[in-house]
Amino acid sequence: MSVDRRKIAAKVQYALWVVFFAQIAARFFIELPYNYWVSWLPALGALGIGLVVARSARQRTGTRPLAPVAVAPPVTGRWSAPNSPADKVPSHGTHSLAQTYAIDIVAEPAGGPARPAPVWFWPVARRNRDYPAFGAPLYAVADATVVHAEDGQRDHLSRSSLAGVLYFWLVEGACRTLGGSRRIVGNHIVLDLGDGTYAVYAHVQRGSLRVRPGDEVGAGQPLGRCGNSGNSTQPHVHFQLMDGPDLETARGIPFTWSGVGVPAAGGTFTVDADSTAPAPPRNT
Image 1 (cartoon, rainbow, N blue to C red):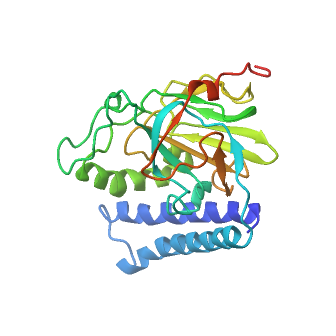
Image 2 (cartoon, one colour):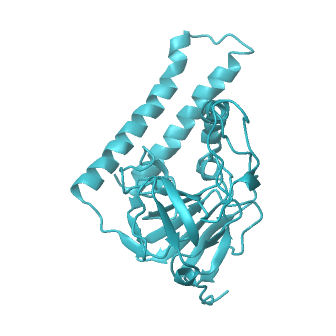
Image 3 (cartoon, rainbow, N blue to C red):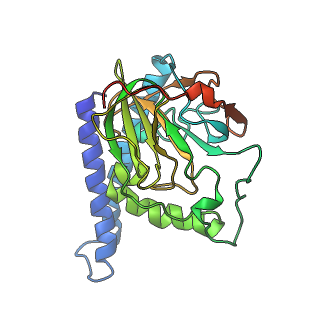
């Protein structure tokens, strides 16, 4: 599927979801002049478009597998990966927003403090500073140009309980879908690595950016800090490579981190500070 077709599909799909949720809201105030089941047609249409786009992505990954692009790790210290393309593709269960080969990582410092474990009921949510990933520095994975950088969205509380996760999926997720891709990924950075490859850092901490669009950065240069903005249940780093700067039309590209490879889900890995030693910016 071409970029233009993916762009049209994304816009139509978004419009259908807006119509669907608008009907749900309208039914609280007025009686719509058509059968209840008709109001589900926009949702079915949006899901159908998603299936077609996903099928195209599956065919691409199956028939034309891409070689992973080697880049430096975006963090230092000890981390683990709740979701990883080393175990399944697409790693997040979807090809949308170029997430085919995306990875999520959370901080697991050897000397503590430990990351809070999920609970069934209480506390419903936790403060972000309870998680060692919150505020961890993010580094440029290669010499690059900053294409997009924003950090104005708030860092919400973690969704550490069953009730919090249900609220996250049923309420927050639906609302952020209507807000578009930038609300889903939260504060984020997009780097142009050259040769048609772009790196994305999602869920960046509010007010932590040290770069702006147009900046030239060197590998290992600090970019911002890990946060908990957007569709995130706890502070973590979401990282991915893609073949274009637009999340809604780009396709995912596999990566490998120098000295680390692709961490498997559930395992831990450690990145020495020397491996992401800051390089001077090329032109800022």
